[in-house]
Image 1: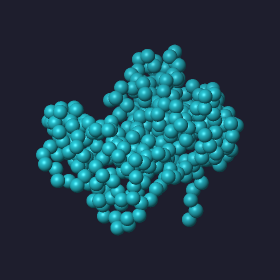
Image 2: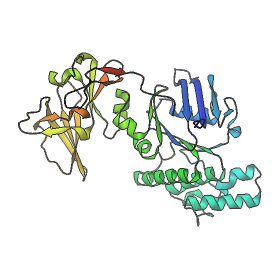
Image 3: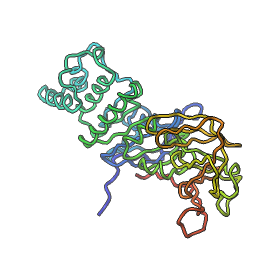
Image 4: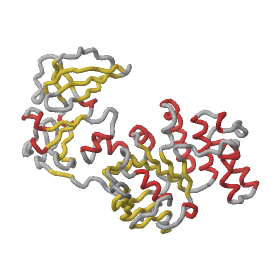
Length: 374
């Protein structure tokens, strides 16, 4: 059985602006019908990648194919895609219905078809009954639904979304995230979605593409990025709060896996994997620490601790935990919960450490765990 060809193929594409920002030698395959999130900090190249797919930027070199067609130099109108923007881009003087079908009218679509597509879009976006309202009469979430409905009526198999929820408050973001994901699955379209918010990426994506400095840092499903970050950057970016990263030379020597140089090694641990003890701790690699503060969030408590020679750590503990600042504690973990990274380049390492069930004592490095084929 042959695998289905990618719906979008980006091959060795670069687009560099004055100052060096942009994307560099980017290669990427995106499957048809997938929800793909481009994630990363400001300036990492995620919006440039989206604009290259859209045709709003033209590559300096490399090729872009959509549905088997080379669109590298094609204008946006020839790429059979729709876009949803951060700003909604609605006409304030037009009604909801007029905003939704504006593009169809420009393309001189038949009136009966416009009517049918409008009815479908209003139904799936929950905007029935709002057809005659102007954008100023809508909430932020309703305006974003109008922008989504406009993308739906276009009938294109590809939808590009550029930070579409950043103008919404937290409660609305949660609701509209679910709407967008449900719509994508119902319509079977391919979505490429740009965000700097790792919560959006983790909750919506089939595939996350984490970017840094114009290059791909890691590709995988949300669980891959959380449980097996390919680099220290990925470990520190994904997760809320993020993974605690500590120079290994600040840890007790009993912690360091055999064969490693503690001066060229970074230790990582997720907040929920830290075990905290306030009494006598007989664990072979307890780390002395001092409580500096806490946040009680109802179902859990975040405990912040200082560790000499480091930026400290965060422990996520269930329920309500009351420990006064200044309390001396000891931190430990189950051996398999530890993550190890090359101290110089940040690549993930796979040593055998105490507390794991691995039989092989060989220490290996995985410098190229990010893959550009989805």
